[in-house]
Image 1 (cartoon, rainbow, N blue to C red):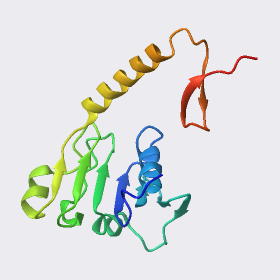
Image 2: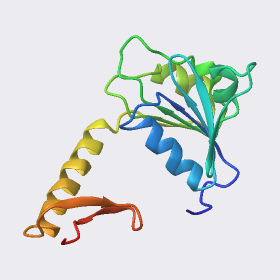
Image 3: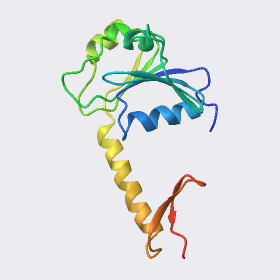
Image 4: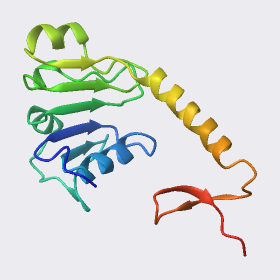
Length: 158
């Protein structure tokens, strides 16, 4: 846990098990208020807790107050309205499809920083980490998740 994101508001669109939910939890543990938006619900993640948003909250209202917007919808049919993004925000598209019109975003929202695609880099880093994991624990026998250290470790001998 840290405070690097203290005072920041983030919206993550897509609460998947692979990207959305873990990212929301990590950012909240670093001090951000994170709106986690999915098809049928929106939750707010804060350090140590997850709650539904008030009934009147919409995806648009969450995005309008966000310093960072992470788009992770794996469909070419989903497009966020660029007018929702506040000036000076950071928009990161981690989906394999562009979830926002880049030209409209950058031409209408001053100061926005846009990262158009991190999918291939994410895959490369996961592969690298998997290879390192295999190399680091080669010959260690069975691996298990050790929640006390927050990573994979050799299984205890019984």
